[in-house]
Length: 88
Image (cartoon, rainbow, N blue to C red; front, side):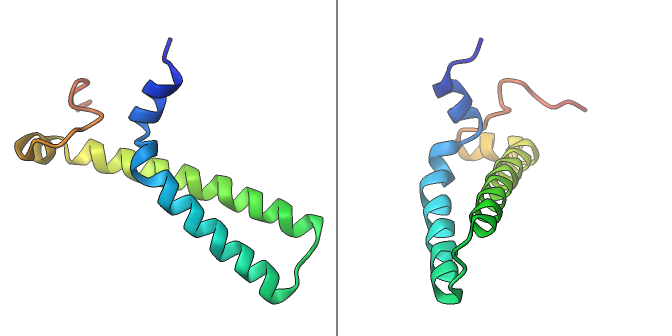
């Protein structure tokens, strides 16, 4: 069973989450305040879009790691898939 820290390392959470999520939230809060959209529906859409953005960011970083295994190995960078290897 994986620990939370292993999952965070695999998803590269520390590489992108603090900067991307805070920037996204600040932008959305600004738009909500600027347009005076104070409703439960707006909050639901905000949360749904936040979840979607996090999932897309995770997917993007994993695809990048999968495609850059050889390049990262040559440059000495850490890659999530270097121990697993290629699937094809």
